[in-house]
Amino acid sequence: MAWTRRIAHGISCQADEVRSAVRQGREQQRWYKENKDRLKAERRAAHKLGALFPEPSGPPMNGFTLLPWLLMGLGAFSNLLQGRNPNPWVGGIGLLTFNSLYIYVVFRAFRKETREALSTRVALGLMVLVTCGLAIGYGGNWLYFFPLLGLATGSILRAPFLHTPVLALTVLAGAVCFGREGWVGLNIAYATWISTMVTSAILSLSEAVRELRAAREELARRAVEQERMRFSRDLHDLLGHTLSVIVVKSEAARRLASRDLDAALAQVTDIESVGRQALTEIREAVTGYREGSLATDLDRARSALTAAGIEPVVRQSGPPLVPQTEALLGWVVREAVTNAVRHSGATRCEIAVDGTPERVRLTVTDNGTGGPAAEPVEGIGGTGLKGLTERLASASGSLSAGPSPRGGFTVTAELPVEPALAVEPHGTALSTTATAPGTVVGADPGRSRPPAG
Image (tube, rainbow, N blue to C red; front, top):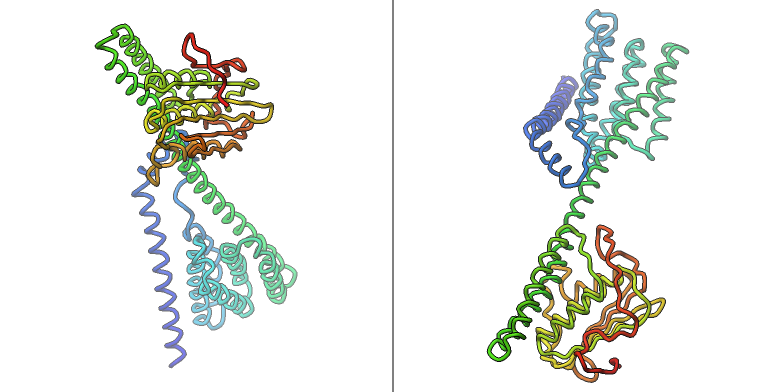
């Protein structure tokens, strides 16, 4: 007959879907078993690197977690085998249909896309109809399909969309069970409510833990990227300035070697000192604890400019600065002087540090014809004037660079006395050494120059 063929076709389709769901679950478990050692090794390596991930807690939850609850239907199955229920074929088809729908729903409950799909909601609605039909038709052990229906409902629904459906399902279970078994049947309604709420809460918590782990892994990945950026930026700024000093001092030593051996040896001694200091700074940059002061950077700037044949005039006034502000201004001095030595062709370079109780301004001006170094290659941030602009902006400061109205090139940096962010990501305590207000640093011995205007 046509209706038997339709039932057989429906059962066949449900069986295919059940086999597909079971196959997917087995594939997930097989993948976890095959990759378990690799996943553990990766997590141990991440733990050693400082990314403190929680220890693996086993394979992810899937539909197999909720399958054992189908044993609650063994009482109804026993009634069918013992012939205690009328129309056993109808009961058998109903039992098979309910189990198939249950397996289909719970295996689709662990992925948001399949959980919210229309086919899943339709299958859940069919489960409600089959459960009510079996409970009304047979009663007794068949009422225990309501808690199973609650498990399936709780696995699909999540807060805040759970309260109304669970209330409706509890009322429906209470009405059907009370009609079949009287007041005793209300226990089934309570079990239905408990199973729905507990299942939804446990699966929601499990999903939140997975999302938290993913968020922590993403934060660790970003922290690694930021540390790489800091390291590349510091190496650029440190080595760019240091190598420029070494080059210009080497050229000066070569020029002086033929006519003034003592002066040439003095330049070679400076090269050795700069090289040793560079090694120390590179080691400190690797660990993220580089120390320095603005006075030290100004002294090095004077030495580099003098060796390049550029007359340095350095002036510093105002109150002492906090370590973070000194460090940021030191980076600006390094980059501006390096660009002046490499590109300006200047004969004079003026460095002025003017401070007030609220803000401090650093100005580096040369009388050359050159400009700043070329812009960094896209994708490599934190280098040159672009990187300095980002550093100062993160500390509520600003950096401007461009041709001077009187000729040459000017770099101007402004910062609050206490920047909003520390310059180093590890909270480094930098040196607070500062030059006395009004001191002219770097003027040639025996010569006096007025402060730069």
